[in-house]
Length: 175
Image (cartoon, rainbow, N blue to C red; front, side, top):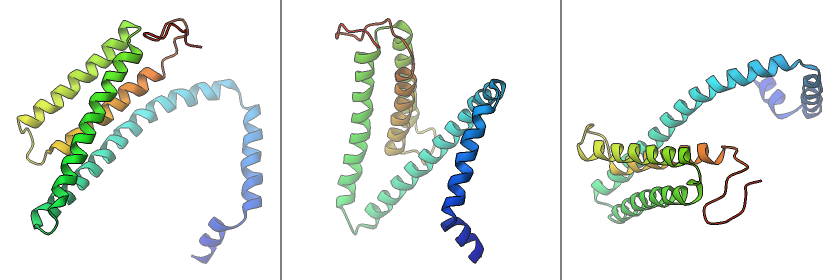
């Protein structure tokens, strides 16, 4: 395995020439390739979003379980305060972010619809939490899901090109 380490850590001039060669070669690729690449990217991005969601949930459950286990052991009672602060911070951040989305993106009715659908999903997630639809569900994990859902909503709204609309209250056009 010495050769793998040497290949990975060395030969930088060869790697640079290879990457530069690939870069130059792509100037001569037909546009049809990039249309197919764009369509494949759309499908792969959905798969990546699902993977990202699973990873965020796994980390949220791990953080919550670790903090609760330390609190239940009784050794460090301040972990309970940390758990509360983290939970309130995630929920407060989500609510603040949604309010700012309404403020900055409400110049088109479709944006308001997207934000409202996000709010409906957030309320639905919280109702599932209150009804205890799962045994291992926690308020912190639910908060991470709400924050991620809000991020996806903001990402969709911020990526929409609209050069003729006004930002609410600013009086300037988007350029």
